[in-house]
Length: 128
Image 1 (tube, rainbow, N blue to C red):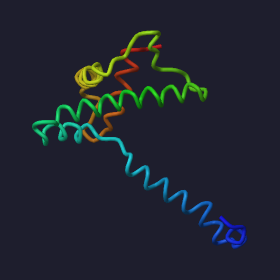
Image 2: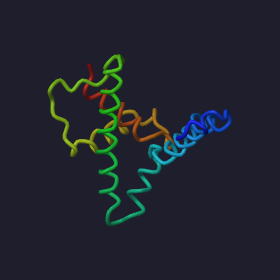
Image 3: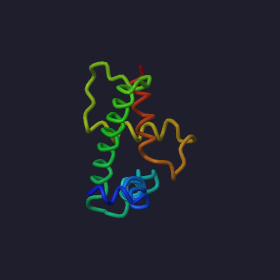
Image 4: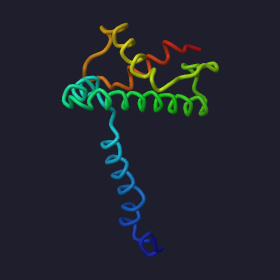
């Protein structure tokens, strides 16, 4: 970016503030979490592969939850999930999710993110 663009204050504001904010807003819309209702619908709409898509999503949700938790702990947050050397296999994701939904069925509404359920499941099964 040339210095002449940055000398023009409206253009500098556009390049430094407006465009990055717009890009961030678009990225957040693309990467929004699937709700419990959407995850159930995904499984039912595709008869052949729906169950696999659900499992893949839950594995990703489990790994994303752990990664976000670890990043928070590195930034100084109090840990709420402690594996303590125990292995966490991808095959465990669906069981963790479904068990948490059954255990606390009155807590969750269909429009809540599936990531919330996974985070609570991990914190319940692997407490600190």
